[in-house]
Length: 212
Image (tube, rainbow, N blue to C red; front, side, top):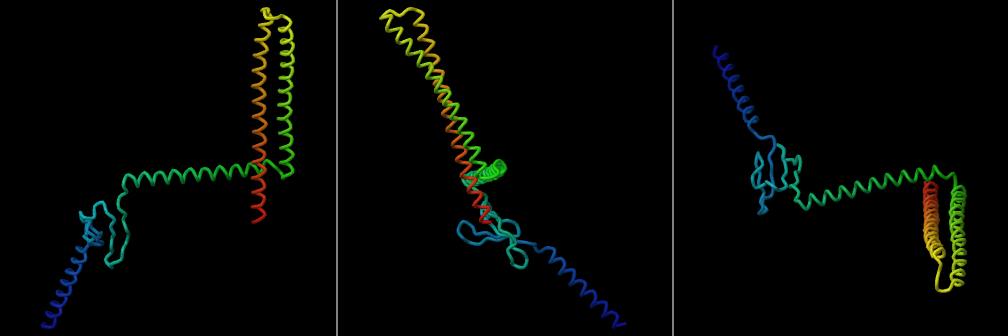
């Protein structure tokens, strides 16, 4: 009987100790938060201490290991800088994507460097012929202008109305034709620039493929 009572007492004591330990474990915080306050002193708490508001803090686990570091909130200037960096990165990525698309199109357009040079010669030749035709049209108008000048000289200082109208029409034609010539010159320059750029990039891509 005595032995049974002692045994029950021991069991009760063990159970009570276990419950106490269990209660302590439940009450203990899983993590604590620590930061350095405005004076450089470390401040910790099972909830974030007021001194840590707006500052970087660390969450520390039961074993004393840092689980994570929470950075301080960004200032307005920092937010703007970060947004600008993100936008610049986005633009750079889009540009890189566009460059890859153009390179693919370039390689698909020309079968070889000789093919590119042949297409370049044909395109530039066509633009030069168009420019020459526009210049020849200007020459025809200038010939008519020379005839008008001769008629005006023969008429003396008093130009007849028909001659005045002819001069006006000639001026209009000449201005229009010179606009055409300027446009054809721009076309020739654009074609030359485009093919020169294509040729340069085609060679660069060719060297890159060889290097690989």
